[in-house]
Length: 168
Image (cartoon, rainbow, N blue to C red; front, side):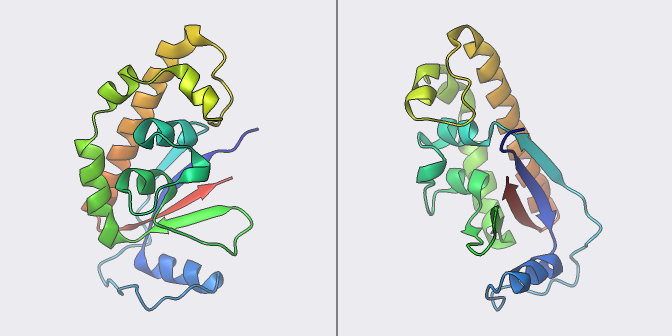
């Protein structure tokens, strides 16, 4: 079993409840009367979240970049410090910026110029970087997860939703 990342739609009501549960301030949440708790938009990034973050930003999990929309796409904008696992959220006001950053990013060029050995040197999770013969397969998997992440955020933008990210 490894450390996996899950991304999910979160209504304003559920975001407020989550923040209250973790004793976070809730005064910055709009009460959207049109928001729905019935919407199910999810993405399971499995174990490739850190590798995708590295492909997008050049840094791993320990160096997430504040105010960088590509980094925020993977790790969220705000993390909940009082949780025993990694829980973060992105409020709907930030989703459009993340979508634009993902749409502008050339994943093919990034992966073409990224040596698998750099993942190993940077201690990127998961530890699968010893097999250079698998490089093309890994690049294709990262390309697929990038497309899924971009599509996930586009769907969230369409429904004017928030995002919760859980990495455990």
